[in-house]
Length: 121
Image (cartoon, rainbow, N blue to C red):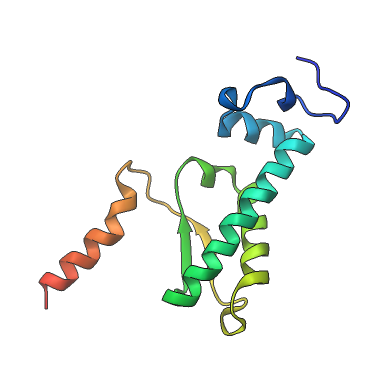
């Protein structure tokens, strides 16, 4: 499929046709629309993580799921925008890392662990 004048093949697809794998594959080829999509997503995610860090003061934040498999395309802008937005006391102190959990139920494991911890009291 031919790209338009902005150099992006993604403009040839409707929003409903696009998926994260298509955007990732385009980003690998330096597609400007795909790279912008990762930057905008990283900006939103980074700012929201900064809010969460202010409330929970974690040592690390773990991302999981399909988006996290895009590696630096999502981790770099997310870290950049989180650091720009986070309260100064937390700046450069919270890591953003990919989760090593692969099970489809991985997202509930943290909450489950907290519940079990309460039972142990």
